[in-house]
Image (cartoon, rainbow, N blue to C red; front, side, top):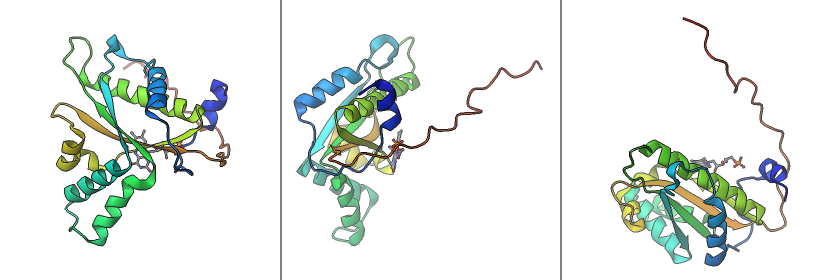
Length: 186
Ligand SMILES: Cc1cc2nc3c(=O)[nH]c(=O)nc-3n(C[C@H](O)[C@H](O)[C@H](O)COP(=O)(O)O)c2cc1C
């Protein structure tokens, strides 16, 4: 796929099939995405893939963290959320102390890598959707994923198969007013 076409037609969508990339494919896609902009080449991130029953464990951790009563409809609803795709990639930013690269730049580098990874996945025929929510701060969730005190859980890429359904083209976003000039002299 040409880059322009891929950028224009990529869509976050609920996967339509239960297929998901293999670990070897994920490694390949991540190798590509890791070419994204990264001050000092720190690659300050890691990904924790969740498949199969790992997703149930995440659902249970979310329900526990939200305080949903065990066995309640709320708990069932929460627990079902990670089942919306066959593969969830947990996104963890792992900032390090660096004399030139503050933590916010490392968050930005992680986001840049994920945006690139979404495009790479789409180009390879998968769907991906970045989802976050208050669950990223919950202690049982962080514990399950082994997220340490200095790390930032940035949500999950929900990944699955595109199947036959191709998203419709949408109009280009209106970016008029998004390029601004220097403010006038005081
Ligand atoms: C950091 C981040 C977090 C997001 N979290 C959610 C989320 O929790 N729920 C949701 O519906 N969309 C979320 N989105 C938006 C979707 O991933 C997606 O970008 C949006 O629906 C627009 O669709 P598109 O990617 O097809 O343009 C998030 C996007 C980003 C960048």
